[in-house]
Image 1 (cartoon, rainbow, N blue to C red):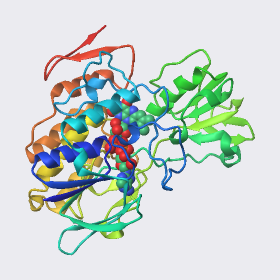
Image 2 (cartoon, rainbow, N blue to C red):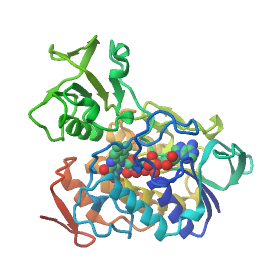
Image 3 (cartoon, rainbow, N blue to C red):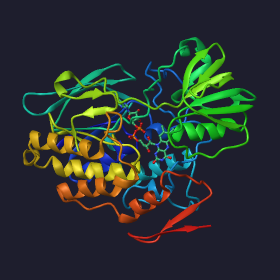
Length: 406
Ligand SMILES: Cc1cc2nc3c(=O)[nH]c(=O)nc-3n(C[C@H](O)[C@H](O)[C@H](O)COP(=O)(O)OP(=O)(O)OC[C@H]3O[C@@H](n4cnc5c(N)ncnc54)[C@H](O)[C@@H]3O)c2cc1C
């Protein structure tokens, strides 16, 4: 088959490696001049030199929120690093080594931006790309498409009365890069997900006070100058009014309120709709039920992304060998059952989490009969329970066991 891959971040590289391994002819299109997607740190925010929004949401001082033992592709390991929680450069280096090892570069077209994808009557796909260096637009035909564009680039903003008057004192975490702008400031961080807790830690090192506002569980580390707050009800000038009636003077706000799923290049005929944070309808969070030769990698969250990309790519490649095995009705029933079982809102449909990690991965493997991800990956992930202690180090002993080491 001829497979087109959109994006050469960690997911696109896994898709490419497994597609080539299965004997397909494939081409990956990457709009930047590098592999690794969001792991490429840049000082820049806003638009790049080709007028496209900067894709990466990476910031200085980041340590991974998962141990590196859970950030590996199948059978390709980090080399020469003892610590488990590592920095952005180390992850990027690993990704580059992976691409070199499997000789993926010749199959990637850099500075090629996908602008339109639509299904053709002959069951193939038309993919239109723009060469950003020459502005030349080219149409290609593929038998299958793998969408690997990441989900952490288009900010999801909250709606809070008075927020529009904060101007450039307030940014989304996508635009956050360094903490020096917050020296001796009173900073309010909204949201305590992985970015919120991590940015709170980094900014609190230099801020006078750091308020962190959330209505979920807090898994971060705190310092003396960190003050926990409920949700913000409104802003009036430099005052933030909180749900518990307290009011604080603030200098800056960072919205760590997550991201949206956006596919600007898919035409209506592709049959994909996004409702809040639900991309529908995707069988097993991967297969476009309207046109099953289109797969999405990495839609799920609260999961180990690298092992996920591996199993999702292997699932999809096996699935497309015979898409007629699975009827559209059957796939939609499976999706609706999953939502019902999880009692998921539209914002949680693609959430996996600790409890369902192994269930989801094993279900993928069982459905198309491919090799499972090693149980030790799920065991280590589950043992963390969403918590992160960057001082801890882990070693994987075998497919079943890991240990904590000093
Ligand atoms: C701040 C931050 C911290 C994170 N920390 C961790 C962590 O500690 N551990 C972990 O496992 N995961 C972490 N993640 C999750 C991370 O997103 C995944 O690990 C993984 O790197 C995502 O890979 P991806 O390929 O899906 O997406 P991306 O890395 O976003 O790559 C997508 C690629 O697609 C390209 N692209 C997009 N649109 C187009 C188009 N139209 N045409 C051509 N190319 C296009 C982009 O340029 C990009 O290169 C973090 C994410 C963020 C944002």
